[in-house]
Length: 563
Image (cartoon, rainbow, N blue to C red; front, side, top):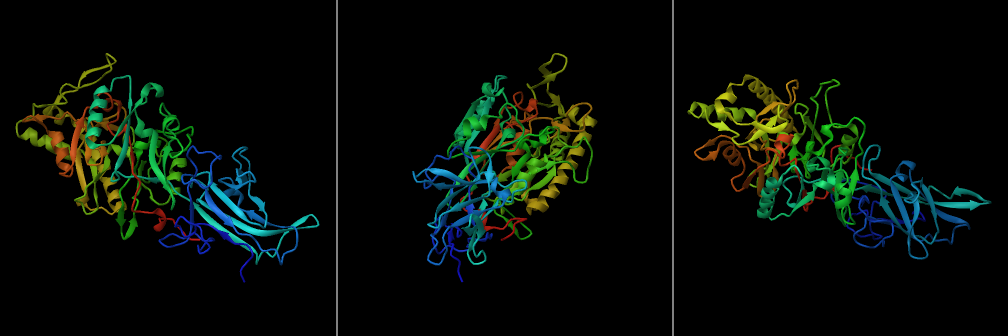
């Protein structure tokens, strides 16, 4: 026997609410399965909006009129949720003036919450707003129960609860990262007073060739913080009716901290923050956060790719070891759909995965991309070959400067012959150790992304100790793995390698490693980024198009479950 209360939501995920929608009380992963979705309201829209406007994040709940002919007087519809969920949503109704007003959940005006409310039997439409993304202690599921409440002699009690109740379930849309295989929409970088004009002009020319606009941020407003890659990570949230770009603002909180709030957050662009804790470290920055293109791994499909971030070596413990802070890791894992992979990056002084790996779009590859890894062995082998061919006295890095601790300026001649470099046994030992770490990560990535050796390409990169006392390392010359991918253009830090027959050996090796149809542009970042312990990718950030052919709810992720 059907109950008296009927509740309708977009449970069939077609963007419409009809009486034929099924499974309002379920949430099931997969195509043609039931489960309503609400986008988190993390953009600048306030409560004073029209519920039916197409670009808001309010999800409708239609409560039908309850027939009263068999009911006693003083009955109303009682709506409730868990107290935990009530702190993460706001439910609105329309008052007699046609305005959106608070009904239950988190009150946006007082930040207090309540987990229940009462409606008349005439029924009405409610509007659900999700206040936060899935995260620590929040699966992203919001469930409402509707019962009849009878007030008799001023005492309320539930009326025939087993026959006259209804449920509905929503899942908050997760945050989705976009890999390098997605088209670039806009590139961001920062103009700084320490003179990066050559870098900017060459970057601007390359982006213009690629047909992608470049936004140059005035660094004087942000304490000349050049590392925009580390401050924010672009992504999006999606429902059946809307895609909302959303930027993750990390716990780094340096000069660019308020850039997303000032220049990105608007009515159609969202923003959320993982707050800083006292003991955050460099691994909490977003040069240490990447995402692969879509992959199949042992028959399991990851249609939106897998998140990759770096940390300490597995089974290694100690107070001097670094890893991404738990608060940020929990957020990444809570999104579920891009099941994260953790690799070993603590061997690097900065500690970011973008220093030794990059995902290279390749339409000629079976998987649609290749994994690029830094290779000290490849670089040293090439230099040894040149030495054997009689080029041992050829200089590398001619015309470039390094920091001179005596003068306190960048006046130290960076040039070195191939012979002198190869004769430095300390650097050789550093590279041997770094190659072991990269090989370890290669095996992790091969197994976690379903890659074969043919799916991997290598760039010549060597390393040096970050200081005389440190075992952690920095790139010895501009790290070409750490480059910007803008559609078919690869904007690479100029390595200033040995010049043989008028051509840079390192540039040739890099160009040959990339797919033949790619356009490669080498730009100078030696003083403005490389000598500051970063490269082109570190000094830029890219907004990319969302996936157009994948809907996250069609594929059950690792850790997913149905209700």
